[in-house]
Image (cartoon, rainbow, N blue to C red):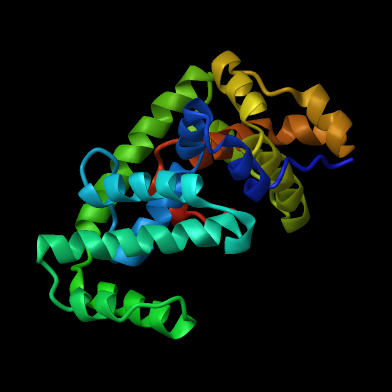
Length: 238
């Protein structure tokens, strides 16, 4: 039996006055925030180095505090808020003149949103392939160290990777369940232990199949919930 966590919409509405839970949600969705910022800015960004990500984090928190069901899906709403705050930032910085008329005329229509995206992509220079490769190389080193804490190597992960699409989809259901269950995720990370018995019970997956994919599941969970946006965006998990 597959267990579904409460929807993100319900979760956001329930934590709006809880600073600790808001901070926890922001940490969980840092890869999402980075993805929105990179897609809007047209360049790769890195936490602790690029102002755009700071803007994105602030905008995401703003989205949590101002969200209600009438605004539709929370992640779509948050994406819009992040994009608009980035445009405000670029206009204040007066670095990208093409953004200004787009911001002055923006509305909630799909046409205007597309125009806004085009304006941002035209006005912001994309990082060179060499820079991107360097950032990804740094993340690979960090991931190697993180896997080492579990007693794993990249070779171990490769051996455990699913060879068939059906198996990959099953593993991704397990991974999605883990990454959307904050309590379980914290337990796994703190104890460095994959609860195979719980997964077997909840998903009705043969224990041997879970054990074969253990190292792959752990690696993907680490990437999707850690500060590995370059690796995460480079790999097609599905």
